[in-house]
Image (tube, rainbow, N blue to C red; front, side):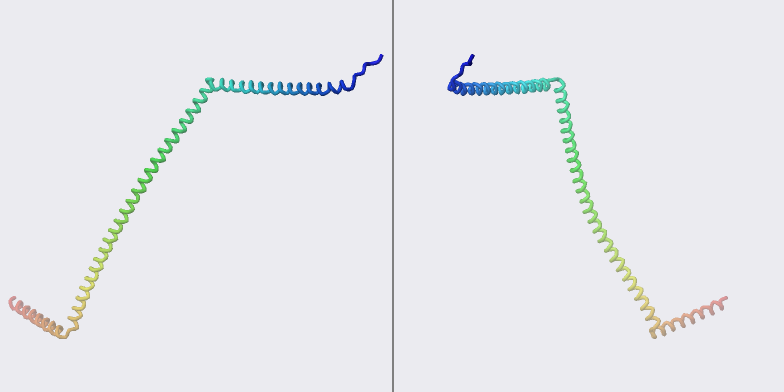
Length: 178
């Protein structure tokens, strides 16, 4: 028995229809896969969001959050205390520097006064030494003059003679009285 033969035009007409149907099926499968992936991603994101929401609204998360808040609050208070302490130290340092500057100025002034007094005392001592030297020099000059002046020596010699004579006469009279 012989098989029926199909006309060649019939196959060629059906071929584009089959290809178009395959193409539509592929596109539909791709569309379904894409929709499945989108839905899957949506549910994954939704699952993550709900688990995070549950975690964030849990008591443990609240405790962690409060502990973190307390730690940050304590750190901030520590920073504020540290800054206040630094400010007090800056103020103390400035006051101490001002005090030291005043003391140095007073010391400089007192040193100037002391230097003035010392200079004055030195001047007074120098003047006294000069006066003393002058007096000694005058006395030495006077004694030199007394020793070397012939008239004065003659007068002194006469005075000495008279004194000796008077003393001798006084001694004689005393002997006579005894």
